[in-house]
Image (cartoon, rainbow, N blue to C red; front, side, top):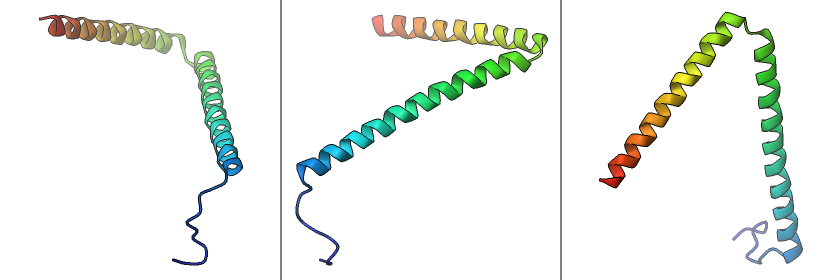
Length: 80
């Protein structure tokens, strides 16, 4: 074993600090992701031509309908 490697367990205070910063980093990442997503959506809605926006809305509706159909088929398959 080298001099830099230690077999002693980390102290409780070190573990708490690591857990704290891990949690802070996780929630900061979640918050930044949500903020960036909202900002991007607003920008896209603002600059997207109306015809393209209508086509995307229709596509989104069709995809939602398709997903509902797949879920319904899955439920009936599990029931039988």
